[in-house]
Image (tube, rainbow, N blue to C red):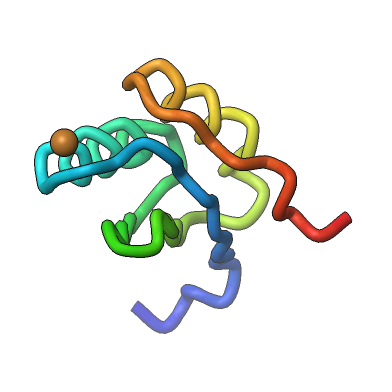
Length: 80
Ligand SMILES: [Cu+2]
């Protein structure tokens, strides 16, 4: 689809993931947030990359979803 110019991408630093089950749990949690199109989790670094619709995806909603799944999000690395 060439109409993807409205996409956005953000990264979250998740703490507490130790195996592929954790990766799956976080992927499912973030993927269930409305507006999210794609979730990539790097177990080694804890970095979660999210792609979705600009304006539709709220960072706070993703943090809440991850916390509800049982993992912590390092919000100190947001850069502001
Ligand atoms: Cu695990």
